[in-house]
Image (tube, rainbow, N blue to C red; front, side):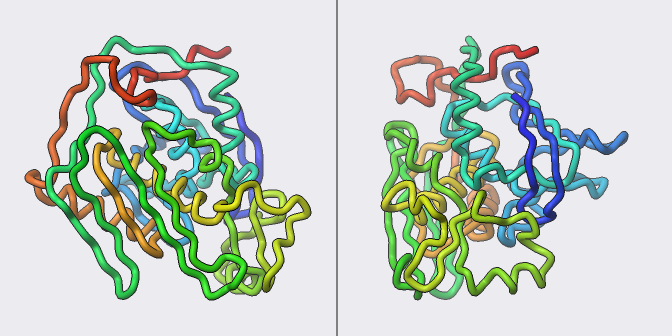
Length: 294
């Protein structure tokens, strides 16, 4: 699968390919514009920045930013082995959601591995708080529930909350939900050298009580659903699917990463189990790697 487009924050045009990979290799990123030390692993302790997007780095200073939408698409479609090649330090933003990734995965198809699936099972409740923001995760029988809430002073966005069962629910609205910002924040982002590639083609822009995008919203909970997409992508930096109940209010990339770091600080907080049977929720079934592509 090949994707060309502008990078949201740098504004540069980038080319990316998502290629098949063997079972048990995981997700690997490769900077094709660098000759040496150009592979990066999307792990929770490799996150070097979580401000406005998720950035991973390796020990040699190579980095790749804005990986969360692709990671969310891979997580939600059950793909846990792929090689991602990109000729820059940021992935293309495409339409601001995971829709194009998911559509292409559907066209290409996936192969089923005979290898058992390893999953992380949360064993103890862990919570992380930052003033009025909080995020927690606790044990679950056989699901990943994400209960997410956002609160904005802007009356159009306001308070939104949604609960998604990642392995059981239809994730179409989550995949299709775009990144968003307030019109009055655009200049601030530009002064921070961010959002140089942002436009109404790849983000929802809200001005007062109006959505500036001519086609409006894609679903009634698009704002919070996009946050759930981001959360799914950031959770996949654990390297495995997770069984647990996550609850978050006013969080984002940084809070999710801080929670995961706290979880993995103590082996008693989680266990890694192998799932060998196929009588389990749909995205647990061994949809492990993309079909071979020319």
